[in-house]
Image 1 (cartoon, helix red, strand yellow):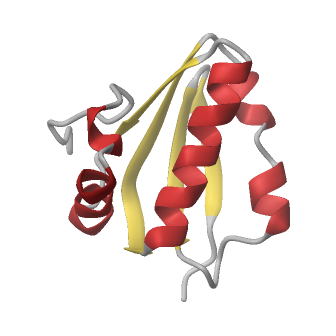
Image 2 (spheres, rainbow, N blue to C red):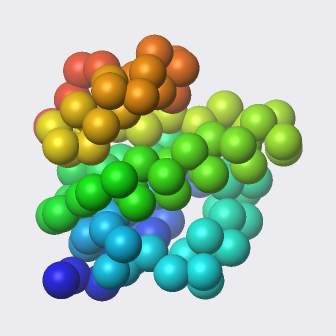
Length: 105
């Protein structure tokens, strides 16, 4: 298990590092959504996510809901395949919040 970290890279750009799983997502993580309102356009890079499960998708959905409440545009990029497959199963991949071409470079 690798601890979940939200790393600010530059204005409106964040990197998620570690695991997005039931074991790493706690109430504090869920409540720490303030970074989503730090700019009108937020990009969250998931290229450093090591392991994920449905809790990761649930957290992303919470971030989407929070961004809508605050009229912030949020985009996820470099989504791990396992997480993208979960999003496809639930239809969330069609919400416009998921960058479908992974930008690893």
